Length: 437
Image (cartoon, rainbow, N blue to C red):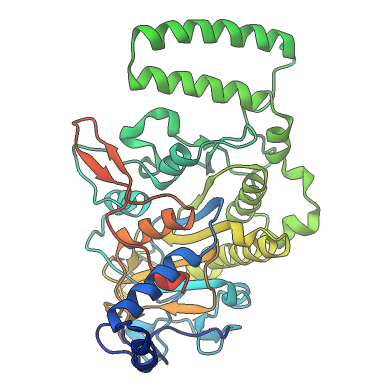
């Protein structure tokens, strides 16, 4: 199948009906099928054909990365909009990226790039909650993050924590009203000297027999509380203790967290940085059984010296880690079963400000998908000439949420009950079907 840029070659009317569809109807009408029947069959096929991912790696750019200086360059815009960077070609004809993403350009055939993600929230905390949960934030309710929902729906495998945050987790990435038992297991920066994950090994003074005795005593006490106080917080604590005991008793878990198991060539492929070693650890974790891993790094809030910060520090690190992750997953045969999502809470203003920076901008930005059965080598949607507004196929945050859940085989129509008794769907939008089309 040829790699294409959506909306650039296929001629469709305003309802998404192509000339090819019209010609098909002439033949199908012989069998009593209408155009509506054809479109329904096509949508059904797109919804059921995609393979189901088993895990997700979310690469989070905290602070809001500039879409124009990364994944949506505007070389023909005036200088105050296009900025200092030049575009480069990728391994997919017709798709260009920033010159500071040379490694990513070589794996563009694995990426489905949305250039028309839009919303109207441009404050860090609220936008992060929106992008990490799929819900517009409310002051009265803390919604569960994607990772927490995946943890609840799919559970753990092989005694690994189902949800891991590297190197830490923001409030937006927590479990919200579904209970603390679905919060992520937090791991420190794996690129730091002397990196070691706490709570995955027994202290020297505790052997397996002593651990079993402690576990039995703790379980008896917890059972009394759970039976006497049937409360979600009590059950969350009980779940936490059970998970902790399984983790420290698992040799497979210890091995998954040990980056020293990797050869230097692989560690260098990803880069010896927070993103690089974080992405490598994420690969090891999903390979061993973790369901959802967030790899996050800040610094993307470039109100000043945008181009220096991006070219000298942020983009080289992200580029090496992201491309290394996709290449490594592909070579190991893991990419089809691992959905990789790259995004931040919003983009940056099209116009460069007097301080050489770009300010908050949520009306148009990017999100990149790869793996998990996603059809790579395509661009979905299009921004206008200055990168300020979607020009074609606007994509909502709710659609991103529904796509993530659908990619994992989770019913995004499923309802959770809030503490006040109000039912909410896991996602309020529909999946981006072009991802699998």
